[in-house]
Image 1: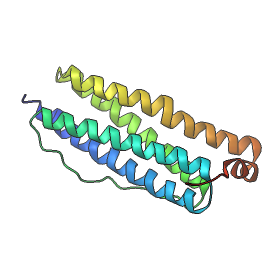
Image 2: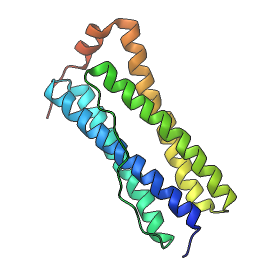
Image 3: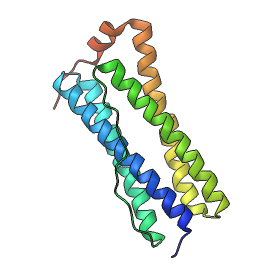
Image 4: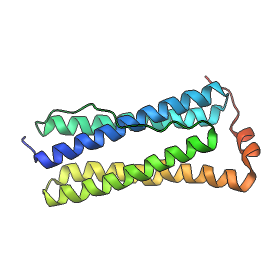
Length: 158
């Protein structure tokens, strides 16, 4: 099924962002693992898996629209400590959120409502799960202090 070239190009842009997010979450999860913050490791590794699923859905849609997925990875911003890592991940999610909104608008203009629904589902996940959780963690650091927060994140790492 031949799709709109504008939608295909934008999906490729989104794929790069999802692959970048995947890589950023992956390196952050491994840093948490090294530091024995088992709870952060588990959550961020899960986020990495979800970003991979998002990229997969977009890749599959590009293929269905008879396009060629561009596997270029967007730049990442690796933090150096827990607060900077959480802030970097939150900035990434805010960026993804805006890009998804722009993509939804484009899909409406191009009358591609199936792709629009894929992007809406990813937007819900980005806003209600990823960004919200990161905002909560940064709020906890402010409320209880960094040392107490870090102590609460210690745990066994598989």
